[in-house]
Length: 233
Image 1: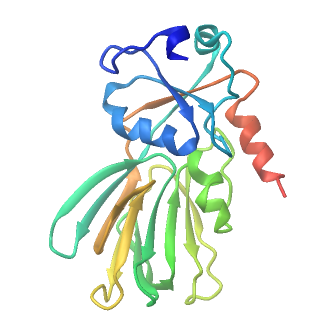
Image 2: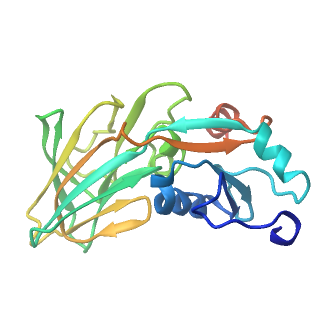
């Protein structure tokens, strides 16, 4: 592909072409989101939800004719047990996950209001619209149709409250998670694939100061992909 089409430094590029799977598309966004250039993926992995069909032909024309999907990523702000704080973006999801055999205990605030005093679980997922078909769906969370400004909140193996199945929230919602009894029940916070161990407080919200751009072929729209996922058995 490089021999056929050439290669530019990322500082000079007008588009990033990813020849891999969804994970590498996420990595490209994470590493270059400040450059504000679109990402065009071609599937060389398995699922390829964020990519297009691989072909060596007419790459320039495909990029020029592709549909541009613009979206805002989630922003995660983490405070760790030692007092350190970190911030990063997430395209698919932010999730909290127990680090040991002990269940996690998490308090949940929605826009500053305590909505759940204690959730005992293996973990908890906050997924964006684009990410709702990934880990969130595997944990029995809902898929968000394209065009709806929503995010999901899905528990992973909830023990108490036993029947709680999560929530669907407006995308402007600010979520605050407090890890309870973190010394005995440590929790890891993850933004897509970036891990932050021994998190004690986690804030998640849609970062509207950042706009990302994904390029998809006209016959490979996000709408059709999302609809197909809802009927995949």
